[in-house]
Length: 147
Image (cartoon, rainbow, N blue to C red):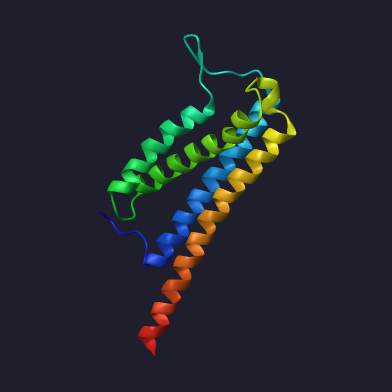
């Protein structure tokens, strides 16, 4: 695989940024789109497919290559973005489907919106914290090598 970054810290920083941005932007775009058109449904036959389930498919499509392959390539960046989009979609609907009746009108309720903000926000915070922990560890190991 082609190494595009100079240090492991740069790879970690970039991966964290791609993940957090893809989750957060997906949440914002979904909320804006479904606020503008609240009765938009994705139906397969007689089944209403919520974006939780579409998100799970994207999590699998992006996450499996991330679990199998190592390195830093354009394809793995794309897999990470697909994973983040899927995770943003799934987490957005998680509280909505638990705390409401699952109707289109319920998606616009404050409990659905703020639940999504909290859950997606916590996932973004978790990703950012993992990046910071890794970067601190890298700085400590560099310091021990130079002393």
